[in-house]
Amino acid sequence: MNPSESIRWTSPAHEESLSRMMELTEIKAKIVSEDPQDRMKAITALKDFGPEVAVPLLLQRKDDSEFMIRSFVAMGLGHKRSDESYETLIDIVRTDKDPNVRSEAANSLGKYGEKAIPILLEAFHKNNH
Image 1 (cartoon, rainbow, N blue to C red):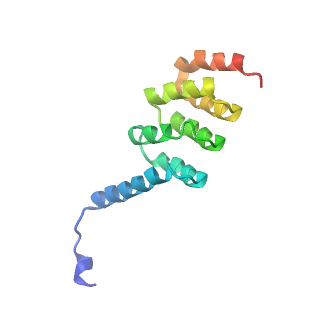
Image 2: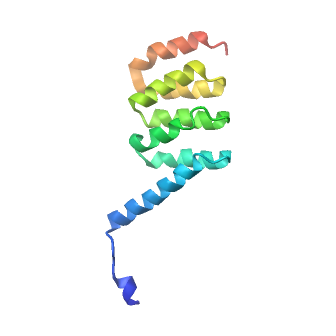
Image 3: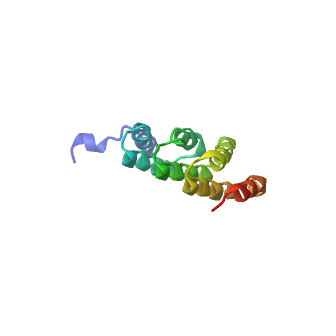
């Protein structure tokens, strides 16, 4: 073992934190990428972060041109529950042009329990599918 290998400059917790920061930097770059696959990778990587980190990044893609990205955003907002997630999901259920995205948003709203029932009933009665 060479001498530099025997010296630990940071704690394991600090190393993990640095690793997550580097990962978060990469996620932030990919979430604004022109490539839909990069955006999808970024969105799915947010599963490892709490709502305080994930929700603002998910909201950046709420109006993405790709319906699949918007569907995953709706799914993510259901898993990363916050007041802002809830309000955004209501907006998606009411306004997104794609029925698949609206359906995913409705599924995510269901995770909010009783308070979502009026919105879900409204969506059910408006939906012709």
